[in-house]
Structure formats: structure tokens, C-alpha cells
Image 1 (cartoon, helix red, strand yellow):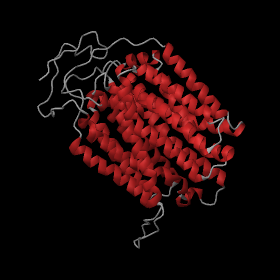
Image 2 (image 1 turned 120 degrees about the vertical axis):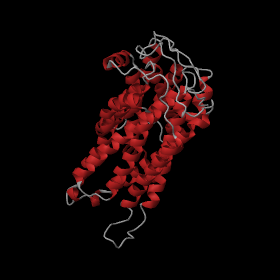
Image 3 (image 1 turned 180 degrees about the vertical axis):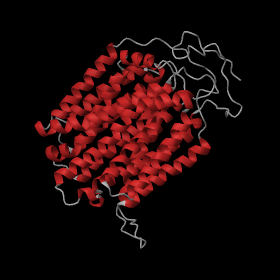
Image 4 (image 1 turned 30 degrees about the vertical axis):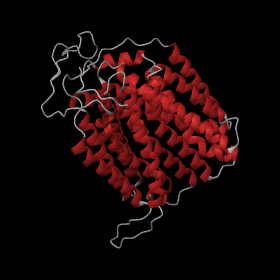
Length: 442
């Protein structure tokens, strides 16, 4: 049993720093390899398949919504936009509270609540036609997503050390991205199925994808119940005073960098269909191919490149280089026209994102002084803020000048790269070095 003692000077452990680690007997013996993260990442992958399924069905769900019957297409588009936005808005608001709760009660309860909430809200969404209830379910789904994301990333932070944390976050990004890629494929297949029920309950191309999404989340809940243990053991992080971590994170540029990176990516995702159709004359299959390339590069390369590159470059250098790559990809979309070259530009954007996202997540966790849950909850809110503002501002600019959203996003990415390189490096932090709590995520 490890008896390592955290130094009294480390932030976040002021009240318990002189106490030895207490590892319960029920705690499994974790070896230092990636296999110990596999059950958690598998649950994230399954849940994200369900999320991806919903993405392709929501835009065609309007004929089931009684409140939108007979209204004009402009109002329908408005409500669909808000239904999409409130999901991210709920994550933005819930993130800090969820993270702080995770530091109090543990990571496993957050993940289980998130998976159960995602399952219930998705199934209920399938059989509800009330517009206002749909809004409520989308808010509930956003809170569930926040619970799952913050719980899972905090658990990865628990099980990794400062040297392996970026790789662990990259594996999380890979699991989530691959699930989101697989989801729309399955959703498209289920969306072609006609009604097959004589009981008065419609099981068709509108309901089946949401039912499948809910079933995926509930299956992941069952798997997590048996396979994912609690990671917050031994010394518990000091959970107060709350304002201390807020002030510490406010003095750091990291949350702004997180929001900015997600703003750039979400701007691309939210405007590319209209932009590619108007500027390049791309068909729906061509724009879909671009999204597949983007998701595949982010999904595969996050784990493939961050680990090996981390042996050469610091997290800060990797993230700064990633911002430059994002700027090149976004800026390239304003000057190229060939379908093949557009795909290359999208791949460069995705590669940059693969460097930025996990390294910023690792830096946020490491700068938290051990209060991983609360810090990653703040990061979740910053992520959601960028995802909320990106399509909103991008769509407005697109209506004004066709290339302006991408010029703005590319300029912002270069500014963020510069800010990150000029920011003062953080002080080294001392963390536990027990093989029972640290996992090599490589």
C-alpha cells in the first residue's frame, strides 16, 4: 500500500496534506498500462454512438412536433437551431457544478448518472411531440452529457500522471470521436425503416434512431456499473473555498484557449454545409465526405500522434502547433476550390484539433492542484461556450460575406497560438507516483 504524502504547499490539499493515502481494500490493483482505461473509454464510445445517431435525425424530426405544424420554414429552422443550441447551453451552465460535485462524491456516480440520463432523455425524445417538452429533454440531455464528460475526463486525470495525462485525454477524444462517426451511419440506416407497429406507438425512421441512441446509453450504463470502478480514492481534494480555483483559472489563459479552439471548430461544423454549397457547389455527399474526413482524422490521430509527439514536445508546444495547423486549414478553405484540396484542408484543420484538445485538457487538469473535477467542469463550460458561439457568429458572418467566418477563425487561431507561446509556463506540480493510481495511457 502506498504511503506517499502530498507536500503541504500543493494547492487544493491544504487540509489533508499530512495524511497518508488511504486505498480501500476493494480498490482493484491497477497496472501501469492502457488496458485499465479501456472499460471507461468503451462506455464513452458506446454513449457517443447514441449521440451521433441523434445528430442525423433531429433535422427531419419536425413533422412529429405538433407545435411546428403549419408554420413557415423560417420558424422551423429557428426552433431547430435553438433545440441544438440549448444542448450546449445546458452543458455550459452545468459544467462547474458537476465538476465540483465530482470532487465531493467521486467520478463513477457522475458517469452513471450521465449515462442513465442520456438513455432516458433519448428514449423519451422518440415518443414526444410536444415542442416545449422537447426543449426540456434537450436541456436534460445536455446536463447528462456534462455529467458523463466531466466524470470520465476527471477519472482519466486521476489515473494518469502529468507525463501521461495528454495521452489519456487523447484516448478519450478518440473514443468520443469514433462514436460520433459511427452514430450517423447507424442513424441513417435506422432512419430508412418504416412504421412496423400496430399498437398505436410508432416505431419508424423517426423514433427508432432515438430509441437506439437511448439503448446505447443504457447499455453503456450497465457496462460501467460492473466494469468501471471509482478512481477518486486515497486523499480527497480540498473542495473549498470555491473562489480560489475560479481565481486561479481566471488568471490562466487556458479556459479562453479552450473556448477559442472550440469556437473555431464549431464555426466550421456549423457553416460548412452552406459555405461548401455556395462557394464550391458541393453536393450533400461531398460535404458529408468532408465531415467524415474531419471526424476520422480527429478520432484516429488524437491517440496516434499525441503520445509519440509528447516524448519530443511539451503539451504547450503541441497545443500551439495545433492552433497553427487549425489556422492553416481554416484559411485554406478560403482559397482552394478543388474537392481533393478541400479535403486536405479539412484534414489539416482536424489534425490541428487533435493536437489542441487533449493537450489543453491535460494542462487544465494539471493546473488544478488535484481538483480535477472542478477544473474539468470549468473546461466543459468553456468548451460549450465555444460550441454555442461558433455556429451563431459564423452563420451571421456567412450571410454578410462568404469567406469572412473562416478568415475570422483562422486569424483567431493564430492569435491563440501566439498567446499560448507567450504565456508564462506554469510551475511544476508534484503528484503521487503510485502504480496503483497512475496508468500509462500510451
